[in-house]
Image 1 (cartoon, rainbow, N blue to C red):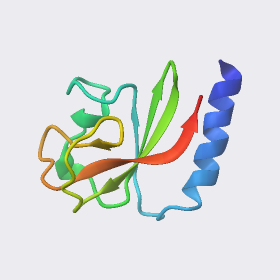
Image 2: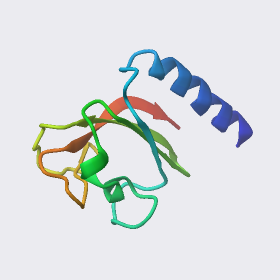
Image 3: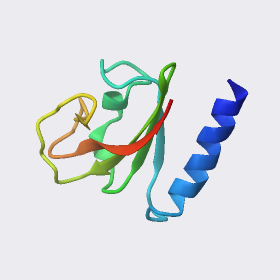
Length: 99
């Protein structure tokens, strides 16, 4: 398990060089359900375009980038809408996956 965490940290550092310095990183342990720790429970009011989320689950880690004007239909795991104050904001799955 510690090798997986080290790999996730290395990938985060590499990935952070590709995103805006103003992006905020959000951690999550699940995708949906609206409960604490899930990606869709993050209040849309605080989210900004380009924010990053990493969802770490037993199967691996998923990376998401927030698109503040997407308005795409929610399609788990590819598109996730915030449950609160989501508006047109959507978390879009990034191709990076850590098994």
